[in-house]
Amino acid sequence: MKLEIRLLLTVVAGLLLLPLPAMAKWEGWDYDFDEEKKPWAEIQSKIPAYPKQPNLIEFEAGAASPHRFFIDAESISVDGDGVVRYTLMIRTSGGATNVTFEGIRCAMREQKYYAIGRSDGSWSRARDPQWRRIEYKEINRHHGVLTADIFCHGKSPVKSAKEALDLLKHGPRS
Image (cartoon, rainbow, N blue to C red; front, side, top):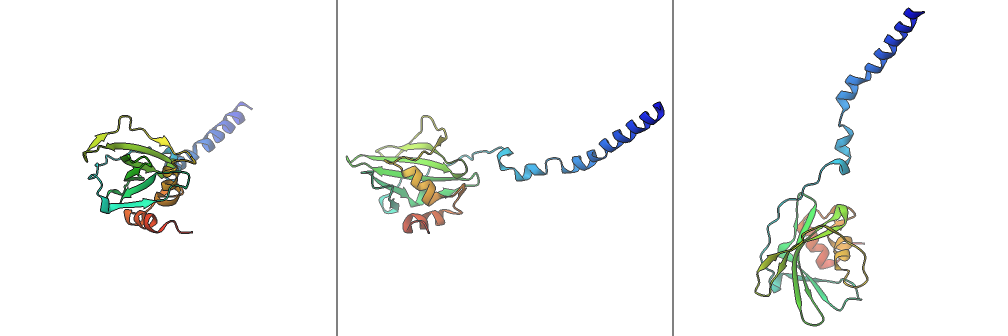
């Protein structure tokens, strides 16, 4: 009886060990398909030249906002880290002009400020450059519009700056 139990245990142990080489061969295989497990790394971006009036493209950010919104066509980049970077100019109804160099990460629906434009045409680094969730807002919803209609196709960025420019100039395709 003891011999039969030992033999049975040996067979069971052998069967349990059989899949190990096969498992080792496939170890990490599903990792290649699981985007959320791969660590994301943001690339270092270069701050573009300060925007010039002829390069500004106005876009509609909702009727509730009294401000005018522009993207500098020369500043748009779609980078390997999945971030669309651009310069945004906002002309407020009171006459002030705000200029920011920023990025949108489509995969996470986030936005980040990299630099703030000064009135003398220079840049200063943003104080707290952190990724922030883009929330739907009725007023000043420009980041939501840029994400939904211009720079992103769902969780993926546009393929190129040219595609982004086309969407800015002609609007999203229905």
